[in-house]
Length: 129
Image 1: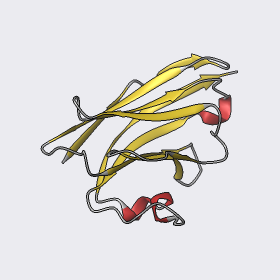
Image 2: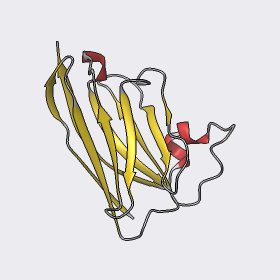
Image 3: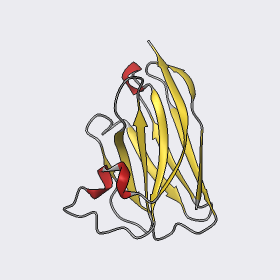
Image 4: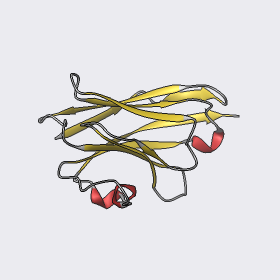
């Protein structure tokens, strides 16, 4: 599976962006898809994850209520809608996919970058103050 992320750019604080991650090579209908980000000089961190077959999305506390992850199975694509952007959202955003996901219920595996067997290249988001 190849993951191609797009949609990053420069946006003023308070603005919105929608990131897309198109998967190719295999249908991801049974996968868990997610987003991570890495800000300059900081460690990579979990942003959001979604069971593509249906179920509850999960978010990092720092983005809860502002970001929304969704999927389009017909397009084999996952999205990250980012609203009310802040300068501390500035980062490179990465799309990930896990092909044999354990249950997300009562677990935290999806918060670990290393639990995903496919990882795409990043797309840069810069939020100006």
